[in-house]
Length: 185
Figure (cartoon, rainbow, N blue to C red):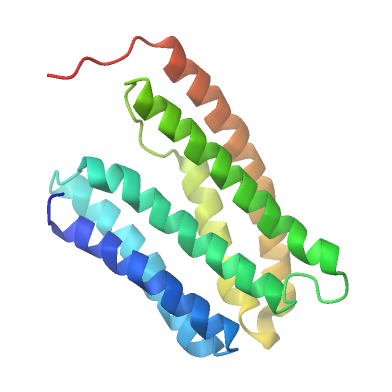
């Protein structure tokens, strides 16, 4: 692994995930929101630096999206445990975290297949970034009582955007599989 600024920021994000999850579990939403915000900000910064300074690494291509997924899924699970996604119906409370976890697992399996079959890993697209951004806002809003209703609406829009992203990524997956594998030098 290359220790450059983008990879260090990704490692920081990975460290923040369990810390944020523990804070949320204990109902400490202000420190959890600060950690979530810092982690989300490092995602934007590390991507910008990696592209601007040409510091894109294999580690970053794999771990950066993994860190994002862990951050979002952990936050959604903790919000579901607290009953903040849907306060009166336990089944509805868990549908969105279950969908997001299933989608991310499916995309992870697809990524492993691409790596295993020696195909080129492509960067994320605008629709994936849009879904991530909407989840980011929704999760922050769901952490506070005063913005709970707005957070639920953002979450619905984020899920719809995520469904669109999943459909698009499935199309990309099959187009990648149709390409010849890359040869290692």
